[in-house]
Length: 72
Image (cartoon, rainbow, N blue to C red; front, side, top):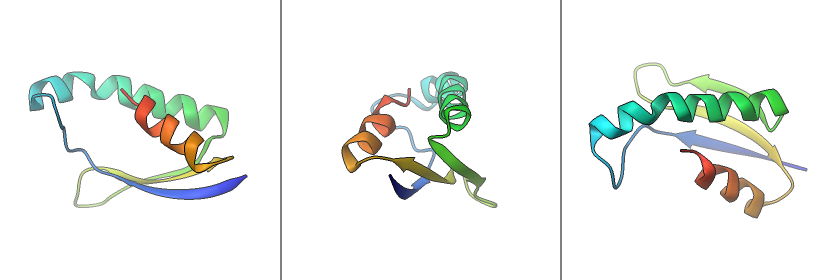
């Protein structure tokens, strides 16, 4: 297993800002599921900015990319 730090930002690409805001609850639920499964070990909010810092524990870069791209 390896630990990866991911700095997440809330910056929509390919969709409107309104569509992005409507989908945020799905993204939060997805992250909560990964926390509950023990894949995300830590999740910190960035003070004064949107997004956060997440610590993932996964087997490979490929698994990390799969999880990141799976976030709605």
